Image (cartoon, rainbow, N blue to C red):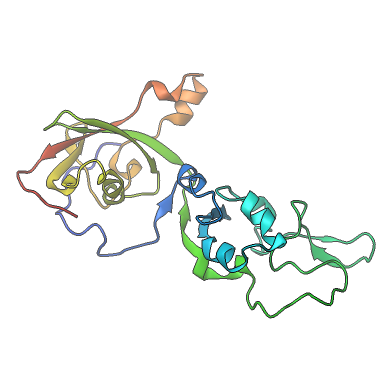
Length: 231
């Protein structure tokens, strides 16, 4: 696939169609404390910090704290989006399956007088905790500023557009939107992904050839447009 010719005119990277952000597994893993607690499951990313604050000191919070920064999709039935269930061998009743230990909003397997069902919607069904989408595949690219010769390596989400990748690059260059982004000398369409712009993901080919994919990283070159746009 050839690079797409013609660069999209500059506009706000938050418009016209702002969408949920993508996160890499590495980004999720950094949020692994009680005060800053993220998890991912079934392709989505959730910030459970408010939940941890509301139930601080509750023993049922322990399995969630231990899962901080991790993907817990194995807790769930992907067809229903609910916690996996199993048959209790003693009672023959259907119950939630929690081999990692019973956690918040999971009812006890036996009658219990202190079980309070007044919590409302269980946390895994509460959309207010959702903050974004977990990338199905990440990529590593080099961004080279041809004006300053500075080079940075970024881990990005394969689903992200070039505008969204530009947003990741802003900590290194606040004027990133003042540049034309090119691949192989051809301006990139900022509304398309790397793959859609012809920047192929060759990891599978490297794996098939038994080569280390780190031996080659695709490079994006930035050419200054003589303005100081800040985003």
